[in-house]
Image (tube, rainbow, N blue to C red; front, side):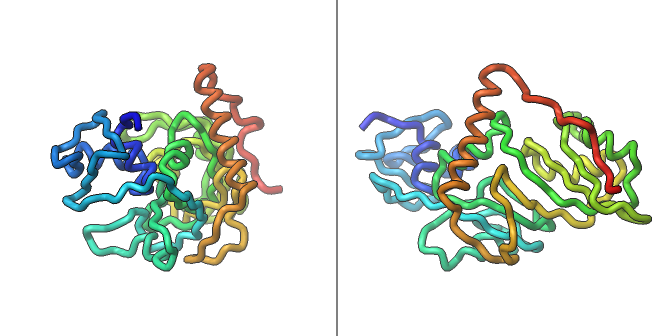
Length: 265
């Protein structure tokens, strides 16, 4: 068998996403045939021995892939383990017979749709920033959002680290004294992006729920519950990501959101 980059082997074996594998390799936690691995090193899965954190990883020649959607409740961190002993999303799928890892993340106080898989290639396809799979959030902010603040969010804002967010599609669902409920659709995956966007325009997020990733909707799935993705949902996610790949290869960012923010009548 031809040699493959170690991070791809780790992802293909369902250990973690390719990005997470790269970080684990940087931290010096990976060895191949007893020797420390470096980022970019390759290995032959048919003959070489892979160790992570001192434990040998049995390499399966043929991997069966699994894809779940989970309704993450508030209070859980999106990680496979937590050094502080906090509850993780893996506790919610502890009864599932296959080891999985989360695709992307929702912060501890956020809730809603989270994908889990053991397919590193699929995770990388979903998470790559240039692929632009849309994510729909229902966001409650306070105080009441002004027209200027909503417009700024829809056009893109400068975050505290100097980066600028891409345009977002925003609908105002509830508009009343003291609070506003927004539906926000974004295609990026910056850490805590929605909260940071709102903070940048002077709004505090008091509740945040992800309702959809691409064509996959949270629907009536109860908090803490999970189900397998259907074949049509999986195909739709892959198709959305592939369209993003095509746009990035053509050097186009895609069409800008039309019509600006919308308020209820």
